[in-house]
Length: 119
Image 1: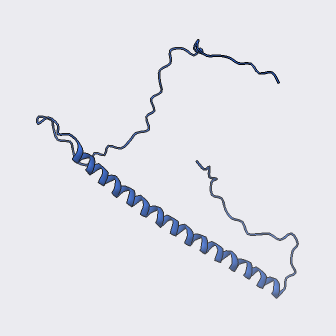
Image 2: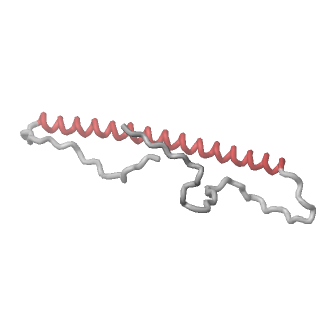
Image 3: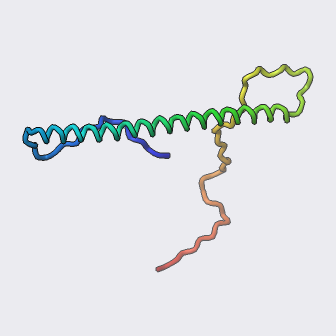
């Protein structure tokens, strides 16, 4: 799984040498800000598109899950007539339970063979 950093503030680029206060310096600052604004707008458009893709995929997954749940209900063998009907809306989703095998001892079994290699 990817580890993501917490979002942080984006600071403007800093020049090491101060520019003289001229009209050209002002236009250069305007150009830098315009380029950064364009880049940020493109990034926002990409993020919006990606978010829409993710929402669409989540909706597809939800529909497929409901369809598979309905098929599973149809394939389920009939229960006893005295059994109470199950309430609607119960989903039988897989769980993340892991059942480890039982071990009698932590020692190695007697049937292990050991081989020593000398280099």
